[in-house]
Length: 210
Image (cartoon, rainbow, N blue to C red):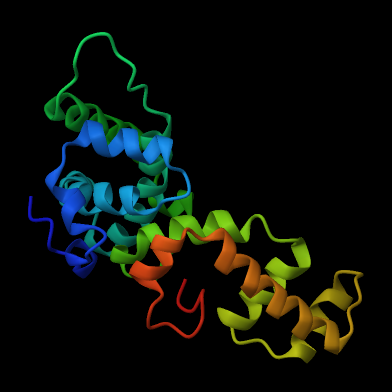
């Protein structure tokens, strides 16, 4: 597996971690929840393996959407894996159970019935998406609505006001700007610092393209 498929694999925070074993990476991931670099490292290490699994089941046009859904499941699996085994588990053991879990998580429904959402976001940004999604869910409902509609869909204040009015809620124009600024500041605090350093260095908007 070539860990340099994504540029992030060569980031100074990530490259050294690609030299250590899976067990250590998983242990670091579970015991340092304020760090995102361990998930990025596991993602860089396993994405080709997971892609190989997916490509055997789905048509190319569905791969991106399925990959995002699958990696979300795999990431939570990383956090919940029991590493406290009496007998020593090696990399092969963990690689096997990760691949087996990925296969078990593949959608069993017909894709048309499943209504798989297409995404324009490159798979390389999945770790950013993962932590951003968790952080956005911690915002208040209005903050979440405003930051997503403004940054992702380019809504103007009048559109947001009209939408909330249709939902039976009211908001002042000046409050939208305040809530938008507050939401951005909170996201910058909630997203792990190393994730921001790896992915957001050259981005003007936190959720542009997400």
